[in-house]
Image 1 (cartoon, rainbow, N blue to C red):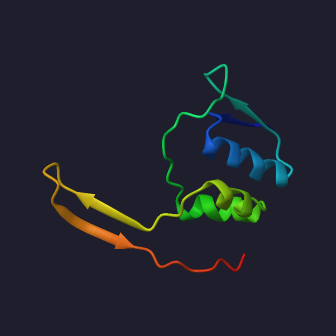
Image 2 (image 1 turned 45 degrees about the vertical axis):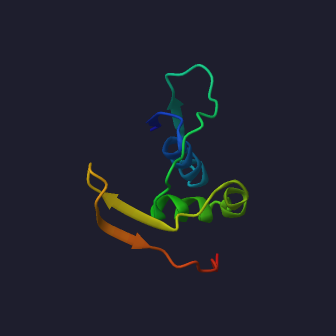
Length: 93
């Protein structure tokens, strides 16, 4: 059995790495002909960071990434109605 992955974004490529490490064959399908930087920010959730850490990629990611310091939800008029600030902690990975 081969796992089919739709999309070669961060999620698809991380899944492919995880499957490869587990010895599970997979194929990635991507619609674009050339993968290139888009100049946009991507917020990786804790589960994605855990997967990348387990694959030994956290140090590489820290060289180019900005760690999230806070998340703010605001109304269309700019009024803040929820905020979560993160403490800077050393990773014991």
